Structures are given as C-alpha cells and as structure tokens.
Length: 128
Image (tube, rainbow, N blue to C red):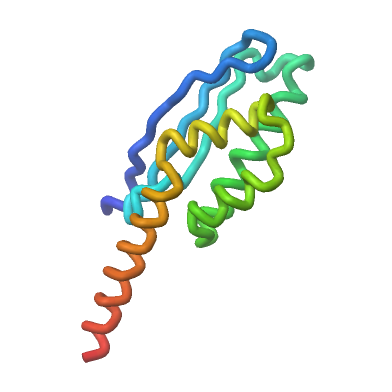
C-alpha cells in the first residue's frame, strides 16, 4: 500500500436550518494536501423525510469527489462552486465554508503551484 492509498481526513459537524446535524468528512489529496474527497452523512438518512436533504448533499459530495479524482484542481473547482451557490444559508454553502476553512483558496493555490512545479522538475530530470 502506497502513501497515495491512505487519505487523511477531518470530520465536521454541521447544523442545518432545522437544528439537525450532518457530518461532513473532507479527505486531503496525499500529493497536494488540498481537499480531494467529500462524504456527507445525514442522520436518519433512510427516512423518507430526509431524502431531499440527502440527495442535495450527496450530489454535491459525489460531484466534488469525481471532479477532483478526474484531475480538476481544488482551487478551480471551489471557485466554480462558489459562483453558483446562490443561497448562503443552504447546506451546500455550509460545505463550501467548511472547504474554505479546511483549505483556504490562497493556500490551495500555493500548494497546487508547488506540486505542479515539483512535478515539472521531476519530469525534466527523467528526460535528461
């Protein structure tokens, strides 16, 4: 098992507008140290009344994770999500705030630049 097979994660408890708590887990990319995967757990998620909330947050988490695994830089993805987050009180908006708290965009851009620079140097060494 390589270091890239193990993800370091942090779990956050988020209160929704109805006083319920959701749990958001943010896993870091082992290479860039920026958010890489999201998981959201909704209490009583199998109950019919929770399906709307579960659908919304699970969709955000799944699309975020798929985009990151597909190579989209965190900073680019975050900015795109922020542009379409119209309700600042929504659960997706709270997830965005958690992402920014976990890894601020300025820090993410620096980490992504550093990784790209190191990767580029590594590729140049192989060519020589």
